[in-house]
Amino acid sequence: MENKLRLDIVTPHGLVLSEDVDEVAATGTEGEFGVLPGHVPFITTLKIGMLVLKKDSKTEYVFVSSGYAEVSPDKVVILADSAERSEDIDVERAKAAIKRAEERLRQEEKVDFARATAALERAAIRIQIAERRVAR
Ligand code: ATP
Image (tube, rainbow, N blue to C red; front, side, top):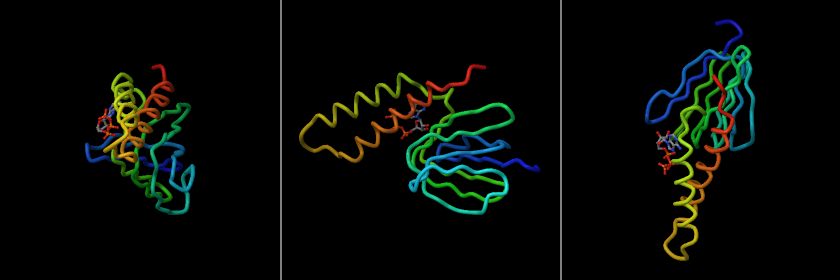
């Protein structure tokens, strides 16, 4: 479609989103990046963060955990470990994940620090994105 980008977000759990959009912004490991139709191709790794998509007059927010993005002039493919649209985020689940991770981090021994920190980060960002839920 002219002047649109096809955005596909794929996780091991399935296709989260496949839509024609006007603009995509996401969190790469090298920093945030924005893509409009016609962008030069590139591939980047992603870190836990928020993907923002603009479509007509709507803005939507999607949680994306680590993975990578493949950008071509008419397409953005996101391959992530997990992803949810803001309205699909279960805030109580994320709060429980924060509690679990915090308890683990308080233990002095046998803690996989990186794993607990990443779980904490995923949950905290999920909550932030859920707060941006678009009223429908
Ligand atoms: P949890 O400890 O609650 O499972 P997690 O960060 O370890 O959280 P992930 O490994 O990122 O979970 O994701 C596993 C699956 O659960 C994915 O399909 C993901 O989309 C889903 N998921 C995880 N947390 C939430 C949430 N708060 N709301 C909705 N879906 C979630």
